[in-house]
Length: 105
Image (tube, rainbow, N blue to C red; front, side, top):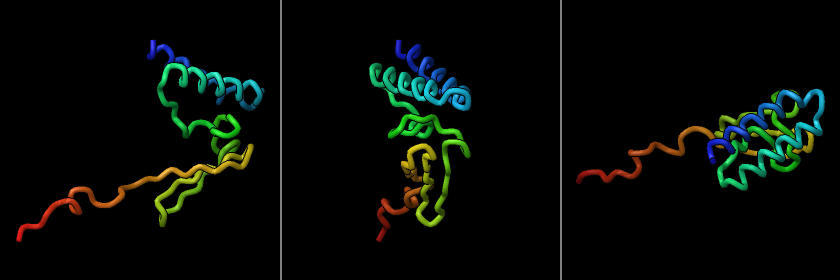
């Protein structure tokens, strides 16, 4: 049952991206339906595919502006509909395996 719900959510998000230019209200409805199905069946949706605050599907250069910061190792997603900003980290958080090992005396 869970795999059917995941497939349905993926299809709804895909349809929302396709139809956004013709009917943005219907596109938001598809995203809302996908979020409700995922909540009911208790599995996470990819949070990089839609805005959590206004529910619009992310389409680069139409509804989304992407900025990167090499200094902070952060990708910033700016929603062009509501202005909400989300940060996603990338890269290693340190050298794993080097800091935690004890050095022989």
